[in-house]
Image (cartoon, one colour):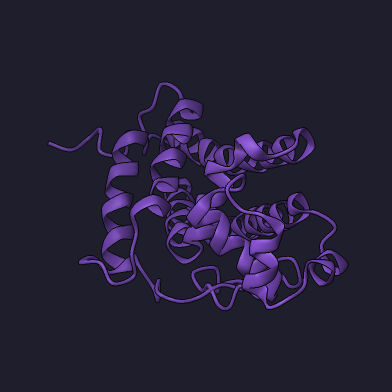
Length: 219
């Protein structure tokens, strides 16, 4: 069920994930300014972080930082847009690899969600907690990407209901609950924790299958 889940991810803004490599999360390819902004947003929040703090952490002057990013919001927008693009690309490849099986598609999408929120923990945390700080257009774009991800799950559940492998009265509500459950991983996961990524994925697959009603025929 699990094949080489540990790994590292591609930046989907520059290249698409080749089929079969959606479990791998390699270098996130953040430049010094984005890396500094990410660390500071995660530690102090968007409003608790100043441009000067980011510039100092990136080893730049304030004018030097503005040469690359015109505002603090531009840094947040780049981080959030890249993260959501990467998540959707991995999820789409994972879904496609499953073929015609709704259950396999569901499992792959859930696994991609779990692995993303472990491998891109800070990006996911910032994207989730700083929605209140996003300007209207960025917030709309972020919600749209989140809705696309949830729709992929809801479609897999609905198809499973149609073939009798899932028993779920509302695939949309189940997909929302599953997405929220997987997003929460970013708030507590630590690479040096007691559970391996493989163990976490296996546990969460069990939780998510029950939400979708995959165990309705169990004794």
